[in-house]
Amino acid sequence: NAGVMQNPRHLVRRRGQEARLRCSPMKGHSHVYWYRQLPEEGLKFMVYLQKENIIDESGMPKERFSAEFPKEGPSILRIQQVVRGDSAAYFCASSPGQQQETQYFGPGTRLLVL
Amino acid sequence: QQPVQSPQAVILREGEDAVINCSSSKALYSVHWYRQKHGEAPVFLMILLKGGEQKGHEKISASFNEKKQQSSLYLTASQLSYSGTYFCGTSPGAGSYQLTFGKGTKLSVIP
Image (cartoon, rainbow over all chains, first blue to last red; front, side, top):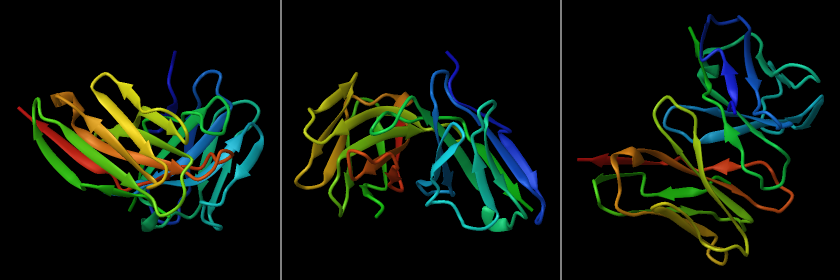
């Protein structure tokens, strides 16, 4: 049973470019969460999505960041006009439902902005 | 508010025991423990719910003191494979899904 999959694992972008991070949840999971992790820091919640719906995006910067989870295909975290401060590891987690269910994490995408 | 983990780092010899604490200034409903090795995904260890029992998993167990808003992770007879950074994630309510993570405790087990 495949776990949460993320790609790419590493992404290098120059300032001003766009970054697209993909997440495929575990089979049978319909809830996706995105977290950001800076070096030596804990994971910080960004957004929670269900199929075709954004449930909570309170942790996501208001500008340049967007997320979607279409009916078909992976969840996408999109960062437009990246800046050096966007460099971090971005983790996706999934769960079958909500409310205290375990969140299973993917291997992350490490974004480096030059 | 981010939970506070202590200690920040600990070095153990194989076979020794360790306790990692996670404290919150807010009332907690659940505490989730994860272990992350460098460059890898956080791996789920266990979840403790308000009113629930102490959990155990092989030689790793945890407790949840609701009154003190604190959880402790106990590692006994540590193995080299226990090395990594341990994170606690907390949620304040039964309907909450958003986890707030501490900064982590780096555990190094040496031969």
